[in-house]
Image (cartoon, rainbow, N blue to C red; front, side, top):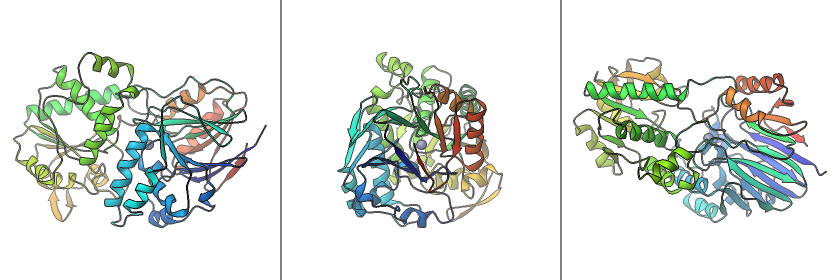
Length: 447
Ligand SMILES: [Zn+2]
């Protein structure tokens, strides 16, 4: 049987900059090419060229649309890459949004690439469906639903009968709207590259989190309060809308104005509405019954900056969902400036807050805080809901892993901080699932 060589270039002992080179004879593939974020020298790392001729790549396969899996792809067009970029059709649309957005507002004020690079990149993109086998050179490629965000995929490569699975980011079971991660594999899988974001953690139940969410919204309504939710545009915002839709339409809460104050999130919601074939059973049934899961009384999609500023004139109670998710920029800044010193305000965090971000400082309890250019006193309540994660926890990762068929599977653990990756690696071994190793940056293996 023919050899497959893997070289791990990114998300090795961390969670950003996903990138793995796969060489199957003369066919060369890159799985993901994401942005490196949150390190001291990430800008340097992002512009450093890959240490092999990218013009020789036959294809880049993108597991899903998130920045840490797709953010560097437009850099390839300037380096002579002329191959195909293959991803699920919904991921292709999400990636395009992200790429154009990063042309305008790169974190450091300097974009890594210009609009022409994005246009050239999009000309190479081929959007495919789940469960559809395609061929690149000598390799057969199939994508299966990973249940993480809309369009997210596990990638199965088959090279002359030798099969390898790339998990991409693995979603959480019973996440609203989208289906659960795929587990109906057949055949004999030789190796798996598995993510480990929460490889050493167990999540709070999503049901409990949804109940906490209802409780906070209900109190805000009764106390005529304002809820500010810093949220990421892709996935999290749509899940919050799904929960609010349920609460309003099942009459669990009184309707109130809900502003999604993020042009990016609103565009993503449009893409979510378009790909109804990616929905899970309950959401599909809901649509067939005539109820649209991302639309309800009181919901406002805010587009212009002047409409965004006018939100503060609304008589409470109301909810504002605005980016950025960690409060290090975006429209959430002016909402915080306007309302953080009021004790009828609740700031609700629904996602991970990185070290050094304004979000983290608020969670840590800072009472005097610089927001944008304004020094503010914090009188608002701070709530954190950690159970809406888009990543499987250790129990679910192991459950997913156990569904992979194979006689002696080799496991390569990536996309997790050191302890998370090691935690999953040890558990895979303990469960008797096969030989397991945490990948290091630059490490190569031949299968
Ligand atoms: Zn992701």
